[in-house]
Length: 351
Image 1 (cartoon, rainbow, N blue to C red):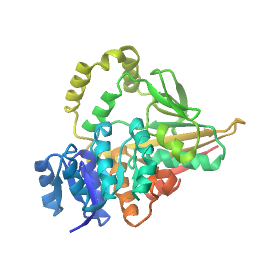
Image 2 (image 1 turned 90 degrees about the vertical axis):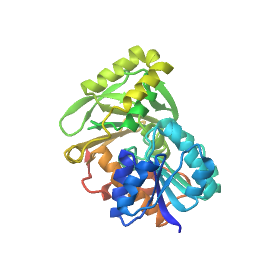
Image 3 (image 1 turned 90 degrees about the horizontal axis):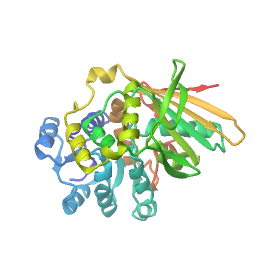
Image 4 (image 1 turned 180 degrees about the horizontal axis):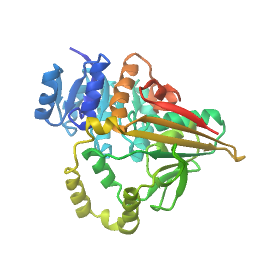
């Protein structure tokens, strides 16, 4: 019997949150991943079907996706997992969603636009906190300032990392920060760019980091110069300093293996109580060639809580036929105000 939605990586932290939210929306997803025991433990009490299939098993993955209309991919690092799922989706005509914030992954998917259109498939990465809120806010300030040439985003509130997120961070250790300049993505040294943002408690120093909007916001807004910053906590400053001075060492194969192994020691993710009492704040500033600026601030629930709600909400819209074929970004397809449809989200323009 065909099913509308498959969640791959369902037994992971974000996968579990999205499974719960999908059920609240009236969806009955197929739960999929690599570990049959974990899937059975999750799926059987919920009365949901499950499929254990490894990404290296192209035939098995294709068979699993042939049963569904939309796949919501939640198993990172997406640099390792995205391509085989997308390949299978294009072969089966299944719409593809994921929750990546990895710039190279988003760019790789953008290059498959024509292929996805030809297969009548939508490919939309970044349907979680990475990058829906910031992408919608970027679209909002771009709408307020047509012809903007520069976009800066500041983010405050990231306190937690799951094991999957930690492994993604390890992959990028010591690589510098990605920015977009003149439409082209380039790398700047860690700690080389800093600026202040008002997250609601006065100006706070923030540090340039790599974030999915460096890729996604270009496709959403057309703004050619994009930078993303995080609130300059002591922990972040220390991590970036380590990358600046010891990056060559952290990039070696033995240290990458050791760091990834130790990422498995992270807690699975923030508890219900931690998510409930945490908030995210994003500030966007657009500037045009004449120096005119517009700014806006967005407040959302904690990042993983938002991801858990947002991924299935977009999946439901796709299932209802609300989609555009080819590579797409959330803010471009669903508009600047889409993020305001979620509980606990508010936006204000800053003048």
